[in-house]
Length: 418
Image (cartoon, rainbow, N blue to C red):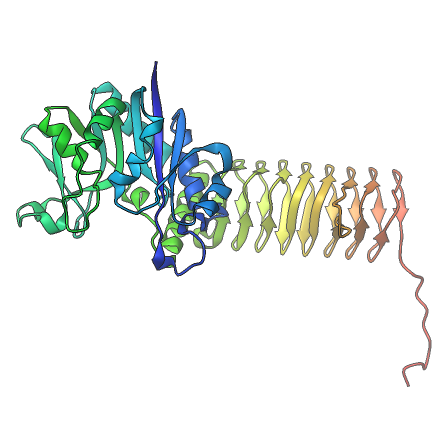
C-alpha cells in the first residue's frame, strides 16, 4: 500500500527573532507557526507527519505533542541533512513524501494537494513548488529544458548572468517518490563552501538518472513567505488577516473596516451579519445571520450566537450561547452563560463567573430585561420574562415573570455634607 508522509523541517535557530523562544513557537492569530504548518499539511490529506527538531526542540515538542512523530537534528548541516534524520520513517515504504518548512505558516492546503496530485498523476519522482518573482534576487532559480521539464535548481551565487534573468524560483516545498528520495540522499555530499547537505542536490541526482521531475507554480506568492524576524511575523499576520476577512466577505458578511477587524481561524459567520471596526473574534466561534457585532467588541472562544443577535460596543462575550433576537448593546461582560431569545442586556451587566478557583454558569431565559449595571453571581438561573432592576447584584435564582431588585434602599442625610 502506498502512503503519503510529510517531513516538517523545524530545527532551525531563528536568531533574527531576538527571542528566548524558538521562532517556530511564535504565534500568528493565537496559533504557533509550526502548529499552523502541521495542521495545514494534515488538511491536505497526508497519512503521517514527521517533525525534524533540533534547537530548543522541547518547545516545539511541547506545542506539537503527539500529533507528529519526531526526528532529531543535532547539528545544523543543511536541508538535506535534516531530511536524512527522518529517513527511518521512510524505510520500506512506498508512496510520496512531502518536505515542508515549519516557519512557512500560511501555505494553503489546496496548494499542497495540487503539488501532491500532480506528482502522483504525472508519475514524477520529484515535484517542486515554485513561484514567479519579478525580482528573484537571492532565490534559487528553476532550470527547465526545452520541453518545460525541471532540470535543476541553481542558487543565486552559482548562477550565470543568463540564469539570473530567470524569474521562476524555488519555493522550498517538495514532493518526492519515497524510494527514489532514499536512494538520492545517499549520493548527496557536502561539496560546498558551507559544508552542508543541500536537498536541492536531489533534483540534479534524479535528473542525471533520467527520472521524471516537475513543478507546480503557486498562484499566490504570499503563501510561501517564511518568518525570520518580527517584522515578517507582523507582515504574515496582516496577510492572513486579509485572507480570512476577504473570505468572510465573499460569503456574505459585511466587514466595515478590513484593516481593523481581527477574525481568527475556524470562525463561522452567517450571511448579512455586519462586523463593525475594532472587533476581535477568536477561534471556535459561530455567529448566525443578520447579526450586528461591534464596534470595539470581543467575541471569545466557545461562543455561539444565533440569528439577529446584537453585540454592541465594548462588549466581551466568552463561552456563551445567545439565542436569536437578543441584544447585549454595550459595556458588558457575558462569560460562561446561556441567554434565551428576545432578551435585552443592559449596559454594564456582568456575569461574575469566576470565584478564584472555579468557573460557574449564568442562565438567563427568554424575553428578559436586564437593567444596567447588574451583576449576576454564578451559578444562577434567571427564568423567562424576568425584569431585573438596574444596579442589582443578583445572588439567588429568579422565578418566571418576576421583578428582581437587589440593592440597598436609598437614604438621604440632609445637611450631612456640610
